[in-house]
Structures are given as C-alpha cells and as structure tokens.
Image 1 (cartoon, rainbow, N blue to C red):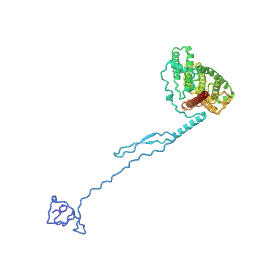
Image 2: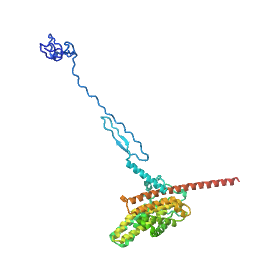
Image 3: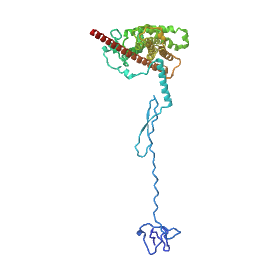
Image 4: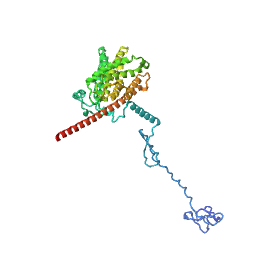
Length: 458
C-alpha cells in the first residue's frame, strides 16, 4: 500500500503516512510511478486530519553580491611657490574587469630638498646684492657657444680681429647688444694645445733639453691667452685693439707681479699665511689696471672686464711659468714640470683671469667716462663687488679644503656667475648709449629742419 500524497510505502495497519502525515485511503492503491505531486496539507500531531501544503526543501539562499569601492582620483596637493613639481604615476588596485586608470600625483618635495633649494636661492640673492647685479635674462651657454665649430675663412678671421682702431671701431648704432657668441677663443686654445702636445711628445722621445723652454712657455700661456680671447670677444663695442691688449698683457703682468712682491713684504699680512695672497695679489692687479689704463675713451663696463682679464691672464701666465721652472729644477725634473703645467692650465680660467675681470669691471661700473679719482676706489658699489674675488682667492689658498675640491668649484661657479652678471650690465649700458645717441641724432635733425624752414620763410 502506498500513500497517494507522497508515494511512500505504508503498512496496511497505518491510518496515516509516516512520511507526510496524510490520511491513507485503503480503497486507493497507487504505485510510486503514478503519483502526481500536488500541494497538500500537513497534519499536526494535535489535530489529525488537518492538511498542510507539501513542499520541497528550498535551495540554500545565494550569498549577497559583494561590492568593492572604486578608488577616486587622489586630489593634487597645492604646488609650492618657486619649487618645481615632479610627477609620479599612482595606479589604483585592480577592480575585477573595470579598465584601470593611471592618475599622476604631484610629488610633495621632501623637507630636505626644499631647504636646499631655499638655501640656494638665498645665496644667489645675497651674491647679487653684494655684486649689485641682477638675474641673468636670455642667457644660454648652448646658444653662446653655438658658433664655435662654424667654418670661417682667413679673411673673416682677420676682419674679426682687426678692431678697436679709429677706422675699425664700429659706430654705436651698429653694436650688437645681445649675448655675444664667441668662437675665436676655441681656435686659439686648440692651436696652442696642438703645439704643446707636439713639443711635449718630441721632448719625451728625444730628451733634448732645448725643447724645455718652448714646452714651458706654451704650456703656461695657452689657457690664459684663450681665456683672454674669450673676454675680447665679449667686448661688444669692439673698441679695444689687439695692440692695446698685447701691451697691457705684458706690461700689466710685470707691474702686477712687482706690486705683489712689494705687498708681501708688509708685516701685517704675515699672520694670514697663504691666504694673504687674496689681498695682496688682487689689490696689485687692480692697481695695475687703474694705472695703466687711464683714458676716458674706454667708458664701458665691458671694457673694464676685458682690461681686468688681460692683466689677470698675464699675471697667471707668468706665475705658472715660474712654478713650472721651480718644479723642473727639483728632482722630479721634467715630469714634475709637465704636471704643474697641466694643473695650472686647468685652474686658470676659474682663478686670476675671472677674479681680476670682476674687480676691474666693478670699478669701470663706477668710473665710466669720468676722469680717474681716488674716491672711486671707496665707492660702495665697487668695494662690495671687489670683496668677492678677494674672498674667493683667500678660500682658494686656504689651508683647509672642502670635499671634492670644493674650494675650486666654489670659486669657479661664483666667479663666472658674477662675470656674466657684469656682462649683462655692460650690454645694457651699450643699449642706453644707443638710445641716447638716437635721441641726440633726432634732436639734431629736428633742429636742422626747423632752421631750414625759418630760412625758407625769410
């Protein structure tokens, strides 16, 4: 016997199904295969015969869907004034199949980097105040040296050099006031380096002592003359001749060396040791420039830079030759002489030439076209700038040395930064002279036209 509700087998004596509790009708006999499931009622034990709806056990509920928040773009921090803002990629974590976006977030400068940048700006501002210069405008080393390797004929080189006389000095209206593009200095340097290498090679192979003076002179004069040529090209008015430069180079070197030797005899400077050279030699070179060049014809700051570089180059060349000779007399001989020549040649552009150029350029900024007077040497604009080469020279010869040859690096960076600041002022002075000359010319033309009109009316 089977239950008509669920199809379960039931003993004949049962009145209710053991599985679903439905009443068993004995007059019905249904096999399990003939059963058609349909809703039925379950009987509670307390109320037999009450129906309950039969149902299958529902499947377990599926877990609720999980959601992962999509990260939002990280907001940019406010940029710091005056500090470059680098950017670094920031990628959010992957979210299923959603396309990934890359956000670029401005990196916040580290406190140490900010302090270094602020310190650099502070030192730059203080240096400008001392030297009475401004920020460089339109300056580019790449553009300045862009003409170094251009081809030029011998006629072009000769015309480029033959300036400064009464017939070859350009009128002020034709003077270039942009940043100069020097190129001749490189040819001078290359020519003398080739000559030095050839003589040195021959000396080492042959051992002929007659070549030693040639090696010593060319090695001592090569870089000073090339640096001097650079300042000659930076003199935009082109009003200084090669004859004037050659005279000042030789005479200035001798006079400045004599002044320096006299200065070293002063007893008050003995306490400074080697650092006394910063005072003695810079004063000696400046006095040489002031005494030798007294003409009011040379009124431009660029002229003063050139005169100072000329005396500084002569001083450096003669000093290097003396050191090389002394080294050659030592047991090290020729090897020691060649070593001192190489070291001094490398350091020359950052030393005497630049230092004396700063001192003379600052003095010409005060002098201009006026007659020389002692009061100019005590002008604050000159004195503050003059202390820059003096202090740098003292640091150069100091008994203590900064790491990684920092004494030389400091002198090179500061010296040439001030030099280019004075060059910029010199170019602006030429521009002012051009404007004044143009206004004078226009006033003369207007007066001439008015005079002609008056004569015509009469």
